[in-house]
Length: 311
Ligand code: NAD
Image (tube, rainbow, N blue to C red; front, side, top):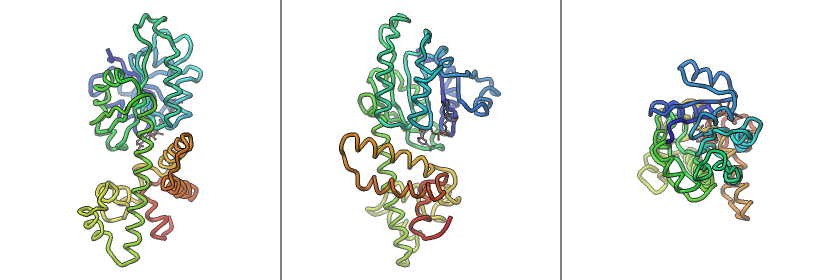
């Protein structure tokens, strides 16, 4: 029933996700505004389309993996968008895996529930939508090991689960529309704060004469142990294969972290909730981006703020 998959947004993440779907045997049709990204697929015989509307006409399900809320709204509601008038051959399931604010996910969900496509296509139900952002980054996207955080109708989640597990290792249901997006921005706010906490402690330790390698050994068998210390250590030379060991290139850019913290702060203020640590982290990442580090991995805050060395 979910054989024909439309995939929109063939960037760092989406290109790998679409490839994993193809490997899993789905019939995938792709679209991106970047012709070069599409060419890599058409060269391999994968059908490409010139607009989201055209993708929707050949798909049972459409997945979007776009930079931010404005891009997602454009792809759904814009001219020749997924919800364009006249789309009589529409998908019955939409999955947005972009990191966006929960309000955007809920706005699109409401727009879809107003579509009344059952009257057009004879569906027993209206089409459904899931917000299903991911954690794991580009290596996990490539390896098919992403974690999906899913909001929307549970019935849609269950239908989509095999598809999601073709691109990831886990899919966790979070509740109604927008809850996947809410979980994602909470995850990333916690990641920003814990990374800054760890790197601040490493910078202090260096000033107190303790080697980063020794402190890493201590953290990793002590109560400060966390992902930022054992998997993504921010201090150059401590771990191989992480951005800090290659001049903070590759990985999760400070610009994307700034975007996610912006979403978290906007969502918090929307419900009248204060996040003092989150807003401090947001200020640090905003400044990091203004200072020219927007394309460096977010762990570069170690060098920039606490080690006192220039870029
Ligand atoms: P990216 O910028 O590499 O890719 C986005 C793609 O969308 C680009 O190819 C772009 O051309 C395309 N696009 C933009 N507007 C479009 C439009 N109107 N129509 C069609 N295509 C359009 O971004 P990415 O790193 O792949 O990230 C995608 C999403 O995943 C973001 O929301 C990001 O926050 C999230 N995310 C990224 C990572 C990561 O490590 N990169 C990790 C987890 C989540």
